[in-house]
Length: 306
Ligand code: BDR
Ligand code: CA
Image 1 (tube, rainbow, N blue to C red):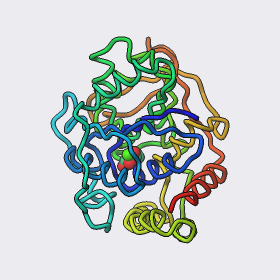
Image 2: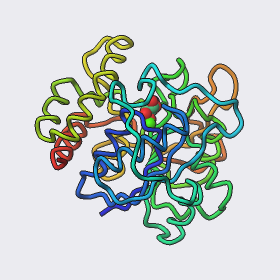
Image 3: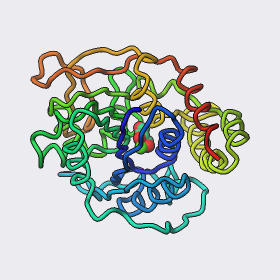
Image 4: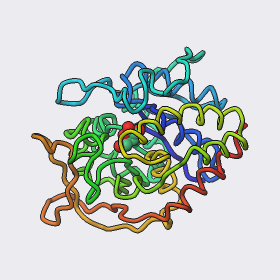
């Protein structure tokens, strides 16, 4: 089993990724850390707790950053994920509470207890990950892998014409992470844009898993509408779930080993650039994906949920 922590800003596709991780028999889900992004920092914790309770998982939720490291606070992605983060799903109040320790403390502690074992899947702005790197010089090298849903080499951006949303929302944090020497797999728009889940796929998921799959089907309505408006096709991209699949089955992807730097300022802020001349350690960037196989993995695993 692969021990995984998910750093998340839930978020519709985050919910899909978390349910997938909870269902996949190969994953030992150790906890969630939350960060602003699709929603505010406050709603991110609430939504993460709601997901953990929905699946009846006994894992901690550690609260992280409410704003970027340097830049002024950014507006949540209401248009994409809805005001409360889960589309039209009502905003229930969770029963439980966040852990006593914060996100960076949790990341530092768990990786110190299990050095070289833990895969961190960062599917949100990289603020918490940068904080852990900043505070503990050994943190990056204790990770087994850092799988990042973020960035784009050739696919352009989705937050701006240049930048993907997660790297765009905290470019300073992204730069720290890509400069850290952590064993990074970047799963960006170059591949996630190609993994499309259609309304009929969600109907099948809901048929197999009426409670939790039904919840995802309900959330997906808003997300699919956004894609219909913006990109004129019937379905949505599985950005965050694709990163979790990459963590357990990298063979479904083609990888390019290259050095990556981040544009930190100006209109291209958050853009990820392959730059052989930069001083950062090389990382693995996903350039192609077996999209039907990833979609199959996702829909099959969700069938194990109630
Ligand atoms: C990323 O941005 C967020 O909207 C999604 O949850 C995903 O993590 C895609 O660019
Ligand atoms: Ca996300």
